[in-house]
Length: 161
Length: 161
Length: 82
Length: 82
Image (cartoon, rainbow over all chains, first blue to last red; front, side, top):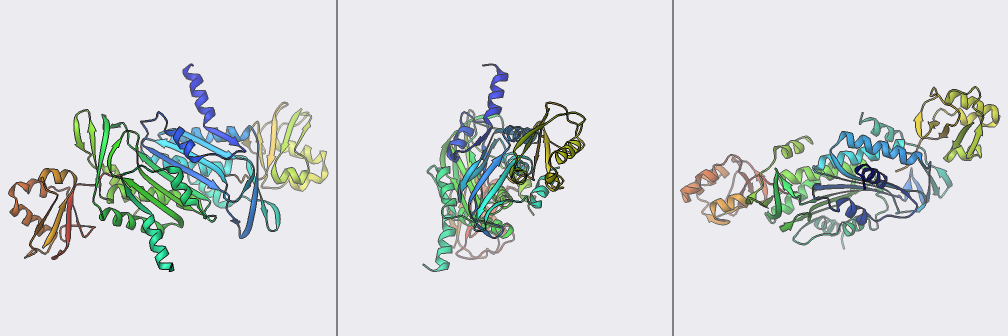
C-alpha cells in the first residue's frame, strides 16, 4: 500500500460515528498497538447522566448531520495535530437512542509527553461540543425536550484562540 | 458501616502501589459503577517507552519509599479535590521490574463537568512526578542507569501555584 | 437547484427535513432564507431565529456566504453533542 | 535514636539502605547530615550533594526542619516516577 493510502486509511479510522457501543479497552489497545514511541495515553469518555438542569432524564436520542459530522471532526483533529505533538487519535461519537449511563463519546490520544495528549484531548472535546453537528433530545419526566446549547461551552472553545 | 469508615475506605482504595499489572477497563468500570452523577471520565496511562534521552531502553526497575509514597499521593489527591469538583479518583503506580510497553501509572477521575476531570488528572500527574518518592533505573544498551529528574517536570508542577 | 436540509428542533418546527429550490437569483445564505420564507410564510419565525446556524457543503458559514446551484445548504440550532 | 533511610542512587552510593544514630544533640536535618558524615567520612560528597531531598516522617522538608528521637528521616535523589 502506498504511503498516501496508508495515511488516508489512518485518517478515516480516526473518526467513528456509530449506533453501537464501544469498548474503552479495545480502543486504547488499538491506540497503543505497535506504538512504542508514545508513553502517554489520555482518554475522555462521556456518558448519559441521569439529570440535566434539574430534570430527571430517562433516555436520550442523538441526531447528527451525516457527512458534515465527519468533516467537522476531521478539521478539529487536524487543528489539534498542528498545535500539539501527538501520536494517534481516535474520536467516537454515538448516535440514536441511548439509555442512562451509556457511553456517548470517546476521545483517545497518545503522545510522547503527557502535556500534549491532555491539551489536545480537551481541545477536541471543547470544539466537538460547539462545532460538530450533533443534537441531543432528552426524554425527561416532562416529556421529550431538545437540549439547549450552553454558553459555557462556547466560552471554553473560545479560550483556545 | 459508619459514614466516616466508608469515607476512610474510599480513600484507601484511591491509591494502589503494586507489582502486578492493572486493567484499564476494570479500573474505569469501578470508577463508573453506581455513579450516574458523573458524566465525564478522564484517564491517563503512562507506559515504558523504548527510548530515553536517545538511548535504547530494554527494561526499567522502579523503586519507591513505602509509606511515604501513599501519604504523598493522598496529599496530592486531597489538594486536587479542594481545587476541582471531582467525583471518584484512582491512582495506580507500579513498582519493580517492567518491560518496554508495560503500563507504569494510571490516573482515573470522574466528574460532572469534563473540565474538572481534565485539570485534576493533569494536576495529579504533574505533582506525582515531582513529589511522590519513586525512582526509575533503566536498563539501556550502556548498562543500568538511574534516571535523572527533568527540570521541565518541576516547571509543570510550579505552573499550578 | 439548491438542496436545503434542516435538523433537530428546526426540522420538527418546519416539519420538513429536506427540500430543493431553484438557484435563480439566490446568491447568499440570507437570500436563501428569504426565499424559504416566501416558499412557506409560516416558517418565518423559525428561519429568522437569531441563534440558527447555517452550513454550506458541510462548512459552517454566516449569512453573507455565497451560494450557487448544486450546493447543499443546512440550517440547524446550536449543536449539543459530546 | 533516629532512624535514617536512603533510596535509589544514594542508597547505592552509600551502600546502605538504613541505619540508626543516637538523637543526642541532633535537632535539625542539617545537623543529622553532619553526624552522618562524621559517622562515615567517605559519605561526604553524597550527603552534601545539593540536589539531595530529605523527608521527616514521610513529609518532604528542608535542612532547617527540626527532628527528634523516634523520627524517621529519609534522604534521596530527586524523584523520577510517573
